[in-house]
Length: 445
Image (cartoon, rainbow, N blue to C red):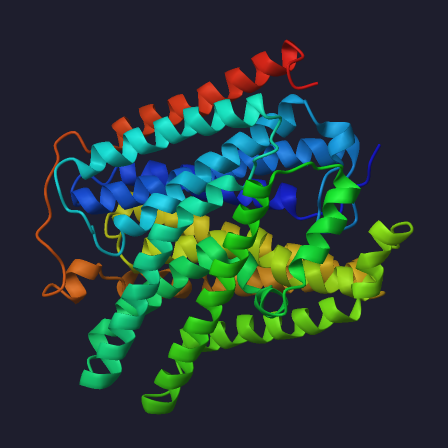
C-alpha cells in the first residue's frame, strides 16, 4: 500500500463540501438577483469540478503512488486509466468556468439577454471539443486551454488598474471593494503561478517542466508547452501588477489586509525563485545523467507555499468572496447555520493540515500535536460566531457599494440554480461516461 503524504485528498474534501454547500445555499436564495445566482452557481461548480478532479488524483496517488516532485503522477503507470482521463477532463471544465467568470463578476460585462446562454453553451461546447481533442491525441495537447484565460485576464487586470487608480486619485474608499475582489479573483485563478513569478522572469521554469516531463513520461506538443508558459506569464505579470498597485496605494493611503496578502505572495515568489536557482544542478541532472532528488527543505517549502495556496487557501478565498460580497443570501436564518458549519469546518481542516505539515519535519510528539489541535478547536468554537458575523454583517454586494458603476441588471426567469445544476451536472456525467467508455475500450491504453 502506498503511503499518501499529499494535500490532494484534503483539497478534494474541502472543495466538494464548499461547492455543494454553495449550490445548496444558492438554490434556497429565491430573492437573490440574477447576477448573484449566476456567479454563485459558477463558483460552486468550479469548486465541484476541482473537488472531483482532486478525488481522481487521490485515487491515482493511492493506487500508483506520486512522484516526489510537485505531486506529479507517473504517466507511464496511469496513462489510459479512468481516473487519469476523468481528472484532466474535469480540470478542463473547471478552467472553462474560470475563463468565463470575469465576464460576470464583479460586473456583468456584456449585460445582454444572450450572455447567460453563451456561458452555458460555451462550457458545453468547449467541454465536448477539448474532450474529443484530448482523447484523440492522448492528452498531448493538455494545457492548451490556458490560452483561453487571456481575455478574462485582460478584463481583471484592466479593472484592477482602473479602480485602484481612481480610488487613490479621488480618495473614494468605495472603490476599494472592487479592486480587492478583482485581486482576490486573480489570486484564486492564478495563485499558484504567482508563486513562480521570479522563476518566470528569470526564464528557468522551462527547466523544471523538462525535468517533470522526463520523470512523468509526459509527451506534450508545442501548443501545450505554449499554454503552460502563457499561464505562468499571466501569473507573473498579475503578481507584479498587484504588488505595484498595492505598494503605491500603501504609500498614498495606508497598508490594508489585501496589501499584506499581496506582499506575502510576492515575497514567497521571490524566495521561491532564489530556491529554484539554487537547485538548478539537481534539475539539470534529470536530463544530463540521472535524476537526483530535491533537498528535503525544498520539498517542504513547496508544500507550505505553492501547494498549500492551491489546495487549501484558494477555496477559502472563494468562500470569502461568496460571503463578504453578498453573493449568497446570508441574511436568512436557515442559511446562517449552514454558513457557520462551513466556516468552522474549513478552518479546522486547514489548521489540522498545517499542523500535520509542521509535524512532518519537526520532531513533535503526537500528544503535543493533539493538544495543539484541541486548543485550535476550542479557539474556533469560541470565536466562530464572531468570525461568521464579521463576514456576514459587513457584507454588501458590488451593486450596493458602487451603484453608479454597475449597469442595470437584466432579470432572467430561466436563470435558476436548477438550470445550472442540470447543465453542469450533465457535463460531469458526460465526462465520467466518456472516460469510462474510452478506458474500457482500450483506446487510451
